[in-house]
Length: 88
Image 1 (cartoon, helix red, strand yellow):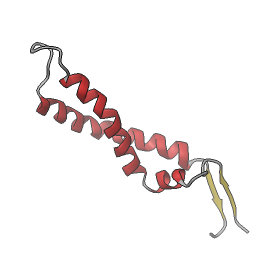
Image 2 (spheres, one colour; image 1 turned 30 degrees about the vertical axis):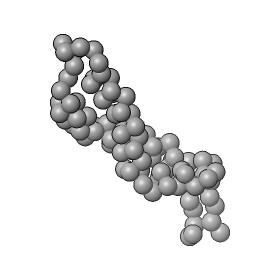
Image 3 (cartoon, rainbow, N blue to C red; image 1 turned 90 degrees about the vertical axis):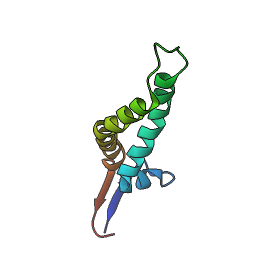
Image 4 (cartoon, rainbow, N blue to C red; image 1 turned 180 degrees about the vertical axis):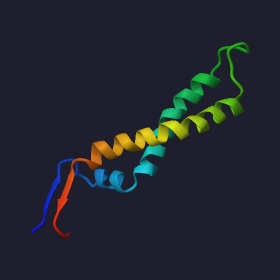
């Protein structure tokens, strides 16, 4: 007699996010990093540009902070709605 509450599980996407939360967080961070990279490397003249290696290094170091935050948000959003009682 198992009860489940899977309100967010319409197409199985929330199940994948719950099971692979680190991969999902990395994908979200990579998608968010693209506009930041373009903005920092953009054509604003020599005085306003940042070297590409510095931008990449900053984004990699930023991932150390932001990927766990994104992961916890995804787990809290999608994993918290899953209530499993009993044996599956």
